[in-house]
Length: 171
Image (cartoon, rainbow, N blue to C red; front, side, top):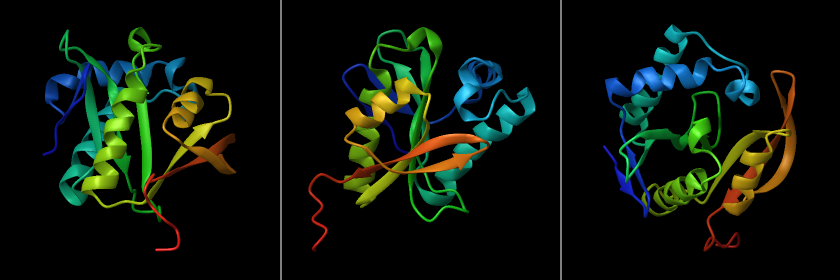
């Protein structure tokens, strides 16, 4: 199972002890505004198991993002390709107390490096609600740009395209 270390972060696999923080994160209506609203504890458990299972089936998925200095879980991030999607998708979520410190951008730069160099991807998307200004800013810092818009659960979302910087479309 993959682990990535950045200057300030450890991107690691899931542990059962992560569940309490993960469940509180997904139960918070303010935090979950942009991803369909809060979910109950048992659904958070299923979501965490989905993240773990995605690694088992596909060899990639969502990491726990841990602060190197404190050892605290600050969020999650990674790449997925759900069964009903034709292309890879990138996503992230940072706990409120850890937001605004560049953790999402730093972690996702590492994920992009992993996806492009080790998985051989040449492109991926991020689906971001129009009013999620923080995630839109992260997507732009990662080099993503809006390709089109789509409706997800009644919210207009931008489909941000991330392209491997050395990929030449004519190859």
